[in-house]
Image 1 (spheres, one colour):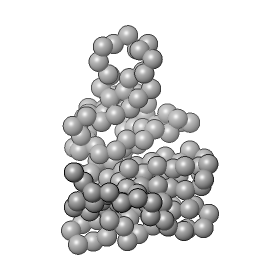
Image 2: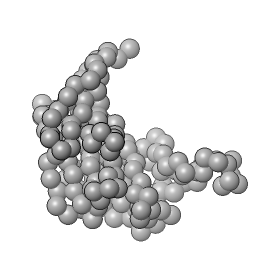
Image 3: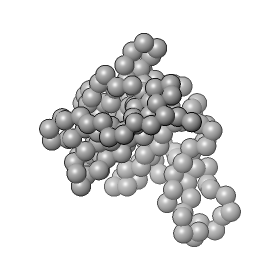
Length: 167
């Protein structure tokens, strides 16, 4: 199953094996969001989490797209979201307002226990968790440069892997 946002206003789902008997993906969530920049699925509960960057919120919805609720609000330019199924945590990145550094935060999947995970980042996005090495990876973005970075979950050691220029 693939879950994706298109133009920020609609979240779609489709089966990758073609067994959904539809030519087009199914619009799962098409109301109540302004600009979805990231989507994550908790495959244990079948909940869909999404960042609405325009509203500064993280919204959670049931698999069918009904029964939606704002989980976290008043965020500072949120961008990416990730479900850590093993720890039952939600992680998200915030770019920060003009002149402020970005950060990555975590919370329980019900929105409780919000915690600053790592700060002083430059527009973090594209969060990826690699449980085999116990590290969180992201791309830090400046005007013309992208930097792949990681944080070891057990030690807190931050590492820069690669820097490349936007073409």
